[in-house]
Image 1: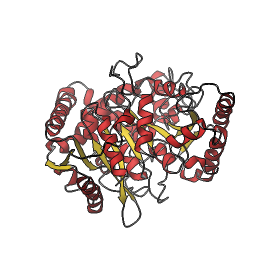
Image 2: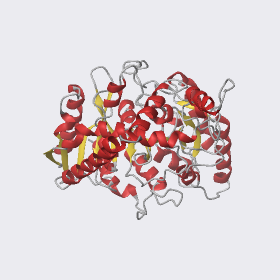
Image 3: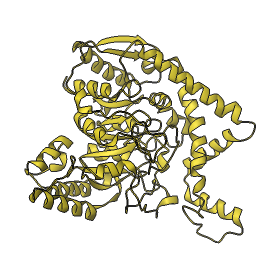
Image 4: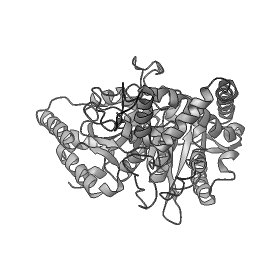
Length: 477
């Protein structure tokens, strides 16, 4: 068999177990694809040697009929803020370009028990701050459908790796839309789970009360298989939920008959490109024909979400990045410092990029004396209003559907000098993070120019099964 890298997770797992092909053959095909598509820049670090070594170990076990994990042989790309023991964890920043963690993130440990293969670490915006990977110290990831456009961000490299078949599935993080937006731009599936469902231990923090670990996949069934392995309580993460184990594949193939789909008017209003709206509505109509019921509703606090996020998130970021001072962690100054203050200025000035500096300044400001009450505490109160809006909406519907982004992938450089425009790109994804609820990006067709458009299926707290059910139904229509 050839082009094994194009197989879905389910087909990989079955093929390896049935000995239709070896793990080594799959890894070799994936490595070849990575080298052919290197100009798109999905990976910061490609661990060809480590991946082949792991694949060979698994092949020996399988030949000898020894027990292997449920994901044996599956090739995974890991966002470069999620620690993998022995591989650089740069956070796409000069600050951490030489950091190699001596431990695995909990999500990686869980998957290693299932015998997955790590292909490498994928590109991201610096410390996951951005919506295009353009803030990456190492370069921008390019859209798989048009090379002069972005793959999205901050988990752009992971979305691109799945779209280009440079892995079987990928891990990412979503703080304000960093899984769902690139998934929409790259025509793949991307799940942001309920806050706390997947452990954040070993993941470099951006904004601790917003960060969520999730995944990218080629099919909804693949996503269910991944979620089965990464969800669960972790004593290393005090925010992880003690939620009863579920088999997420059990939510597939149930159809949508009788399901109530909420359409918030704010998600289809001014600022959303007409072609994007039309393609999302086409998908909704397909679901309606399949037996779903459409309910019109309102999420009035949507307009405040970006403001809440860009007060709360930089505040948490500024606190989380304090440790990177060039003494305990991070980049050391390239020239001799006159004193300790000068040392800090040089270490952080050289180590951090422009966008990180901007957010640290904003975050420090809103936490400072005299401003914390006026900004940070008010933002937290408005976040509570957003949560209540979703609760009210879900009393009238089972899921909410809207675009994953106001528009398709934009051109490289188009927004980079306009931070406000870049920030408002997440206007439709941020509310979900504010509420801590699950949302899944699904392909929803292509524009006349051939660019992918994605929609997001939003569900109540701990209702990932509904997202998966709708995604699977849409795939079959």
